[in-house]
Amino acid sequence: MKRSLIIGISLLTLGAAGILLGIAVSPLAAQSLAAQVAAIQTKTFTIENMTCALCPVTVKSAIEGVNGVQSATIDFDAKTATVVFNSAATTPEGIAAASTDAGYPATVQN
Image 1 (cartoon, rainbow, N blue to C red):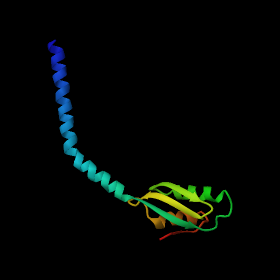
Image 2 (cartoon, rainbow, N blue to C red):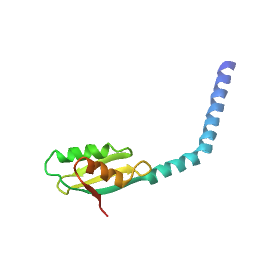
Image 3 (spheres, rainbow, N blue to C red):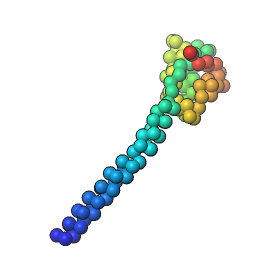
Image 4 (cartoon, helix red, strand yellow):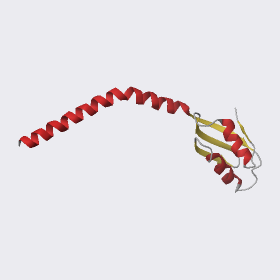
């Protein structure tokens, strides 16, 4: 019985310490999360030279190959790409350059 009591008290003590530690770290984690969320941006690009069904695949591959790009949605009919990216890791100009380098000049829409 003493052994069970000691184990139970130990677990409660560790749990309480974890809760206190979580509260102490929480503001820092919240600031870091806020900074990450603030760094996430979405931009739409006009894409030139897309003439066939394979073109959007090439554009998507080129854009998603840029470090910091989370996703790219290509609209063949509208000739656009909507890109979600981390602005701490890349810029709209870097994304446009990747598409342009693949043969599909891109410009950021305002």
